[in-house]
Length: 458
Ligand SMILES: *Cc1c(COP(=O)(O)O)cnc(C)c1O
Image (cartoon, rainbow, N blue to C red):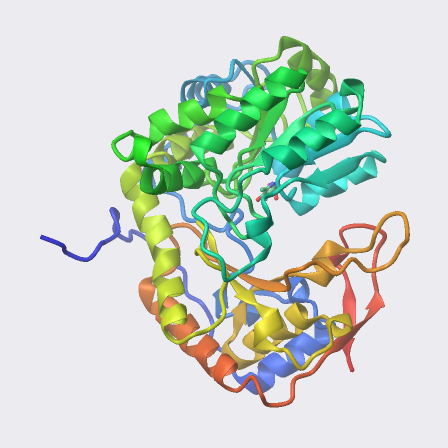
């Protein structure tokens, strides 16, 4: 029997959201300098800006919040989190941090220095910024298929081992403090990395004596794709897959706001005593004592429960299937989306959506603004604004892909919300030949400009 899939949970509490008119939204986005980060949440009907920290917690997580132990040192909640991270990831040492970029800051302060090279698969923006901030360089070794939205490849987050080995051969070992593998690969479109690729990358790193660290923000979703798409793992439990994935590396940074199923939090985990010892110094300096690192006890407790819930097949099935439900609806109407659909978001191919706008006028950003004005939907640009300027030349970097990401929060919206989003997108796509507005920058900060950039209509 093949019945439709249904969520393995029901709703216990709700949050009202506000509707608005197109006239209101036109005014609000102008006041926000055409930067969607500047909108108030009340001005948004369906908020797909990010799946980071925007999910819903379970009753068991809320119960753990009540049990939080707020002792400065050695709290029970820390012990619970530590033993959960050890059990799920297999890594021996764990340092909590207040979110993922804080984990990057602490770990890179310990391991990355000026002039270093950090290869990986399309580093996430904060990861890249933390590398470049230290005057070192991130080298993208993702497989070429990742850049073509029409090509179907089951694991578009994979590292190209030849590209990686070329980097290993070109630079002395001392210059490469680590490889960072992002699972799933956010920047490439939430695309997973196969177990085979993780295993082979791990082996190549070992051969050259270079540590492999995971950016594990969506490790559970990555494990789900391995379960679905890699034959040998069809009958494996998600928790077994997760354990094996991490067994090929030396450590990880984690933004718990994703697959930790909490609204704030993160950690570093590693098997290296040396890396752990070095990192604790910076953890204490930047985050707090090593048994809380920027998190309250109750939040560590909720994270521990969240990690267990996020690594259950039933949950992952409903989470990823909802993203794919929206994706399938869009593809049925020929709306250009990146394929295959990733784990946490739909990526609209703005080059095909608004071909009339020159790339210098920020195509993807202009599409994101259009979706907001027409439907009250907030997505985010993953294109030229996010790619920022080349640190050496100061000129815009034009990425191959101009995307708008619609990230789906975990356990938060219904499929009816997805139907609404699909209807708005179909409308915007079907009217793509009408005149569209391009934009120019009137203010930008030195790095991570997308958060605070100000634009004006051309
Ligand atoms: C969100 C994210 C980060 C940064 O984490 P924050 O919690 O937002 O600081 C790093 N890497 C990836 C892949 C992410 O998705």
